[in-house]
Image (cartoon, rainbow, N blue to C red; front, side):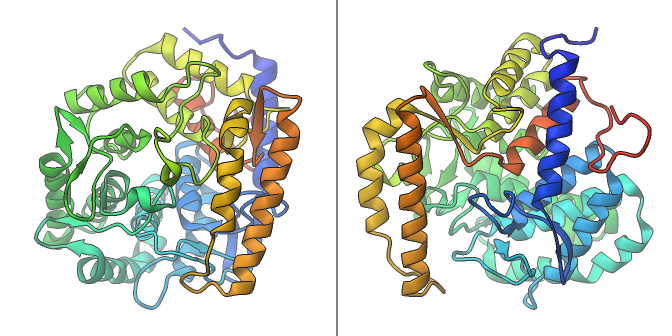
Length: 413
């Protein structure tokens, strides 16, 4: 039976607005066509490997293979000489990262081979063979702890020190990437890497029969709730009905659903370290949970989550985070002090640091201004990843079969 939570008119509008968001965020760089994390006037006018890889995977699911292929070609041209992929690239396709985020390399492999399998693209299979071999060598020599068979993490999906150590998202991305390598290319090396990393996750990153967000840099378990505990499901490494996945989802439902305004926050903001941005629900992570509930047949819960996503879109545009005005009042001054403490690091010059600081102050001023008239302030809208995950959830829920970025004359859903 076709679900009816979302009316056809608002569905059509969201699909069209999402096409427009993709079009505005698309960039033709010297290294090929790619996708910015936000349109150029937004908060992230960069090509993030993570966001691009997930967009490729979603486009494969939605049968928009031509665009996925173009993005894959960009990834192949953007690979570093050492075999890794950078966190992000500028509009010209040049590296523009400020910290190491090791999940980027795994996600690039995962996206490339997801496309290859979906499209049966024999040409790209061969073109990608050597780059993927180099990426594998980089991982084995530079990021994999060969005693634990877990990948060490500096920073990752949350882009802060809360991921440091051995993070579940990063390690699941690597296990999924190497499993795909084995399915596409065969070979003992890929099979062993995939199996050993997955085994290590099951052995070292499970406690009380649920997944851990990470082991800290000293190997101590970090049992705090985090939406990334869904990574084993997200990367199809564990079935959605396996006990550790069910238990992890239950912890997230109990602790990360915002009871006042709805939506899922990414983790609990215990201290200033976890409050480097203003806390609030994230639509792209919220869409993860809708995907999960659809997968286990919990239709009512999935539909309620989808309703929240559509209700919290502004003219069908989804933000990166829906910030409660109460969060701004409580933590705004603390965040301003944190911004002032920003110091140059990595490749950042003092001038670049000053520019970042000024931009973050301007963003905070904007949120404070908006919070005077709103209960919930949509921050950084539109956010491409939020649209991507919501499209994936719509597909899981039976609302959308095919979605083309550039629709031809026929209807695409």
